Amino acid sequence: MDIFMEYLVAKKKDTKDKLIIAGIIAAGVVISLAMFALMLILALAMTQSENPIGTFTFSIGFVLVLFLWYGAVLLINMRSIEYEYIVTNNELDIDKVMSKKGRKHLVTIDVREAACMAGIDDDMHNEVYRNPPPGVRVLDYSAHSANGYTYFIDAPIDGERTIVLLEPTGRMVDALWKVNPRNVHRRAE
View 1 (tube, rainbow, N blue to C red):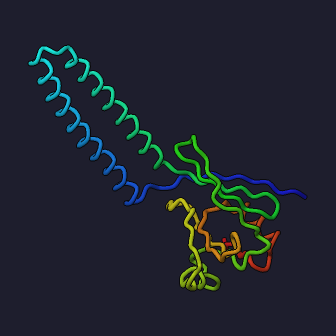
View 2: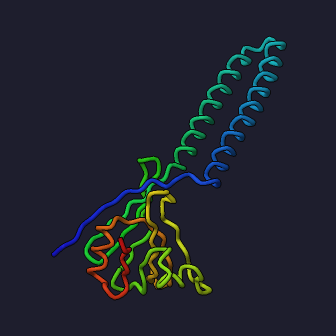
View 3: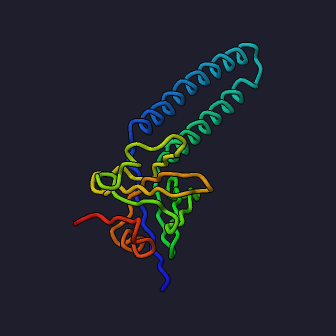
């Protein structure tokens, strides 16, 4: 029997995201003010020399400021991140969806090869999550939402031992448990 499930979670903006957005806005304001000051100085210098390029310079500068803010809005929207979990038979794919437009494939995990999958607060199985051995990558693809339940999965990805954090649905965990019942530990309801 083939298994196919999809689930999309929106990543909650953390302090780092808010600081990046504030930095983008601050940089946009500073660069805009500097460009307007430069345009004003050039326009005044050109009009005093009776050169008709003064108004053209101001117009070009204004268009450049508009492009600057368009780029700033695009960068801010790129901080709107969703993770899509896709279960297909024994594979778990995780994709990153940015501003509901761009998609980037992050990892593919063969659940049959997973050493452990459990909730991060499952004290019987989360020792590897709480104290990862040296050289183990930890990838956080969870939403950090208050209503979600975060799992970790310890599995080889591209030949390297990796711990991945995610927030799958209960049905997804049940489907993954059927693939690897010894190492997938479901949450006790």
